[in-house]
Length: 437
Image (tube, rainbow, N blue to C red; front, side, top):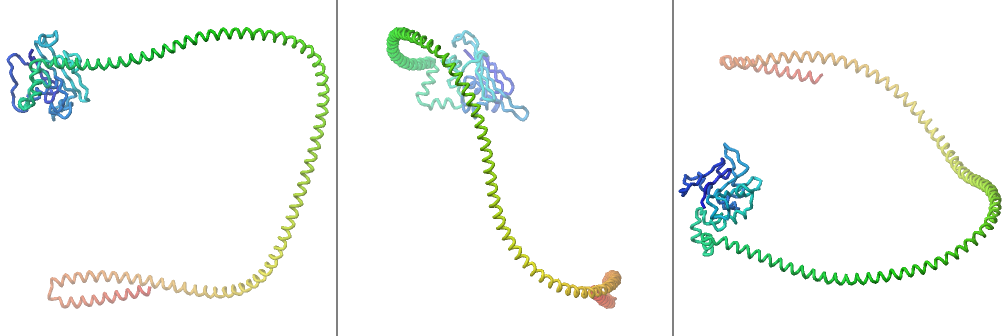
């Protein structure tokens, strides 16, 4: 048995579908660092059933899918197919070539393929057991694995030697058989418990069956007794029936006599009923008259009481009105005196109002005169402001001439002083006019 080919698609750095043919005589794969040699070994371990992402140099199983680059988008699936040739003698199969495949998707789902048919990981492990091919077997030695084997415990090295000797398969089968024996033993214990429980139920059911048989015999005896009792009661009922028939004939004979007497009594009852209705009608009329009279008496009593209360209230009201009248007369006298005083004050106010109206007329005339004066002052003020602006422009020109003509400094200074005094005088006049306004 030998490795024939390895087909990789979307696994780690193999974005495109890549198929490696291993012809006879191939002893190794060489290449520069970073070209994917270790990824090929990881692909072999992965397709043979490696379930640890850390052993494949990743954080999770989805990390084995191609994540994309700047020029290529990531893929959604990784698939590896390993083909073995000359397998009919080495493996328990009739095929000369066996292909083992594995797929994984980004959502975490995955599947194993054996000759392109879905299978379990256990089927692949059982097929390759004892051949030295597997994810933890000696056929795949990554970097540092030999040093780890040399420094490992004797028990770990023994497992490698047993795998090389081909007895791992039989040990696994032995372990599986022992596990099945333990499971069978547990089932036997359970079956013994079930048998014991069933035997206990059988004993209980046998007791219940004997009770049921006894119940059936007693039930038959009870039915026989009930039939005898029923026959006896039937004879008694027949005797009672004959006696009741004789009694019925006697009652029918007396029924005619009772019907005649009933008709007579009904005629008497009809006459008494008519008389009763007449008495009842008369009684209702008398009761209505009595109730009407009682209502009239109650109304009269209420009116008497109301009139007494009203009389008392009116007497109180009369006394209160008399007091109000006397107070109103006194208030009227006071108001008449107040009216006389108000009339005298009104005459004085009218005289004072006439005087104030004369003063208002004089003030109106003064106001008109003051307004005319204010308008004249405003015109004068505008003229002064125009003169001041002209003087300011003149001062500016003089200051410019003062800077250029030093010889005229003293005369211009005197002129400036005079102009300043003139400005101050005009400003004072303006302030005085504003104060007068």
